[in-house]
Length: 313
Image (cartoon, rainbow, N blue to C red):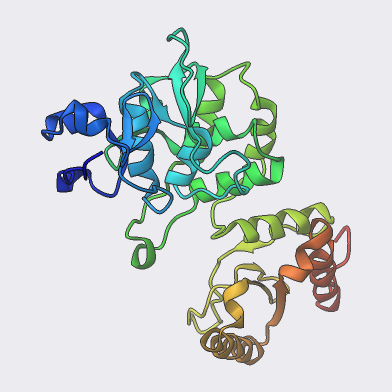
């Protein structure tokens, strides 16, 4: 077989539909060339797609399947919501299709047919995707209570404009409640209702959420989230990830990046600030999060007891 003619630049390096190719002037014969991978009926690619951004990878599968939108695991990834590592194949995309629509059976696609309201789908990166609140509810049937809470915390948190380029939450607590109310009988609804009671505005990471839940389940008072330390002279200092202002205790979760030299220097400076302010710093790492984070809760208990807290007080 002869060397294939180069594809138009607009189609290079990403999966595309046969309809796209035709509009770009690619012949049917060129689409049949062995240099192109067949990803399903009407979908081709000129090379591996694993490194292609998710929105570009899933786009052709939505375009060839009418009435569909990215949903569940795929939508959560597009919204950058925390979730456990995917168990299904890397190239399997989750799509939602309205109740009553024809059944679809295509490779690389997991289709969910269920009730879907128009305002539960929004355009993101040029493709239809379930909204954060609908994605959260759909994921309730796949995740544990704590994981649903972590995802909900990520939905309602107020982002930092200087780091994320936005200042508005993905959705509100009201949005989550409304989505629950309009989908009675849906799978995962009981877990979603239970999780909603535990969601808080203020958590900046899934690790912070898991730590907060472990502390509360250990019978300790619920800590505040990312509230700045303000001294009596009105000066605003840094924000502990979790804290008890009454007992002057700040709790910091140290992720993998805390082993870097620059971060170690910042952590030392932070510890010195805590001491200067008369606060106690409790540092939690991954090793404290084993066994349902009971070691972390125990460490917080020691600090609270030393500060004068007693159960029942």
